[in-house]
Image (tube, rainbow over all chains, first blue to last red; front, side, top):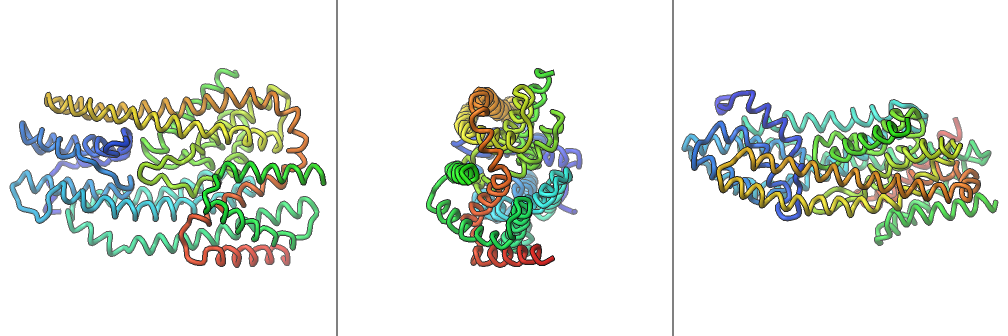
Amino acid sequence: MENAKLPRIVLVRVLLRSFALQASWNFERLQNLGVLYTLGPALRRMFRGEELAAAYRRHLDYFNTHPFLASPILGAILSLEEKKNRGEESYLGVQEFKGMIMAPYAAMGDALFWGGVRPLAAGVALFFAARQSLWAPAVFLLLFNLPHLWFRLIGFWRGYIRGLAVVEGIQRHRLPDLAIRLKEATVVLLGGLCAYLVFLSLREEGFSAGWGMAVIPLVILAGRLARKGVSTLLLVLVMSTIVLFFSFSG
Amino acid sequence: MAAANYLMAASVAVVSGLDRTAFLQLMISRPIVAAPLTGWLLGDAAAGLLVGSMVELLWLGRLPVGAAIPPDDTQVAIGSTMLAITMGSRLGLSGPAFIILSILVAMPLGKVGQLFERWAREWNGKLLQKAGDALAEDRFRAAERAHLWGMAHFALSSLATFATIVLVGSLLLHELAPVLLRPVTHAAPWLRVAFPVMGTAIILSSINVRRSLTLFAASFTSALLMLWLL
């Protein structure tokens, strides 16, 4: 806590603004204006005159990372800016730190949240949807947003308090390993979900559940086609046409 | 009443569209949330739930990484729900078959979402100049405000995608429903399951897990056998 100098109200404003980090996402410098906007209240509090202009210009550089894992980075940037304001030396400058950390954090965040948490939450919610339960959206939002908001709130706070040391904290959590475990859980869950949906359809149409095993080669075939670059839209339209043809003719 | 419905669905389209990238990212933009929400506002949450459950997995494997713009499954879900409910009531049609037909019509139209979103991101590039000019004159708050204009671009892009899906989709459904509804009714129980299975196959192709097919096959087989035996 000894490093914390900014008033809490400023920190809260910065945290709330971080939810709009990608509002002006652009192809030239991606999230750079978002960083400038997010840190604005803190920079205005810390610097004056030419120093303030220089601080704003520092954050016009290219920046891109995962929006949720941006929180610890933004917290650590604030800590570095404070040190700079106090005239303390740091072994990494603000721009060096941003440049060094954004790509690995983007990769970790993409794998963990887009590749792990989101499909897993969707898989669980779809079981509820299969039973026509309107709890499905609520279950999805809860499962996704608990880790999401935890990372944003706690990550920002720890980034601010620990400064550059927040990187070690994130390393200790072994997020890439966690992402792999979540993805494995998602694959198992999707297997169960598909079996459940196929079983319900076969029972409704009066077929033996054994016919459901035909789904596995279909999944392998569709997966291979998707990997070869066939678009989702084309796969779905072709599959629908085949299903329509056989259902109508049979 | 119809105007109020369009207004409500358009509001969900804009809010969810912002949630996709520009603001919050609480995932109310996911089809499993946005479609039931639209359905509930239009008086048929069950229709929205069916749309959400069919569309959710299809593009879930397409990650919004770097400069990649995934297909706009949010507007496909909201647009399909809107079409299913409003066109259904206008044409005197309802039930899963008409909902599935609405999805099939909305899906190809959703491609325009990528185009509109690309334009929004290109317009956002012009905000850099605006912010740079403001900073050159020490107008710091004006530079911050330039960032917020990006939200207007994303909102317009979402609204344009939604409007395209609903307007063109209404015309297409009007023409196609009399021809295609009967075959879709026959195929509806299979299509309901085919969409999530296809989505699963696409996710497995991109999930980057060793032996994902083995894991999937083992899980699928054991679950199916248990359901069969119990």
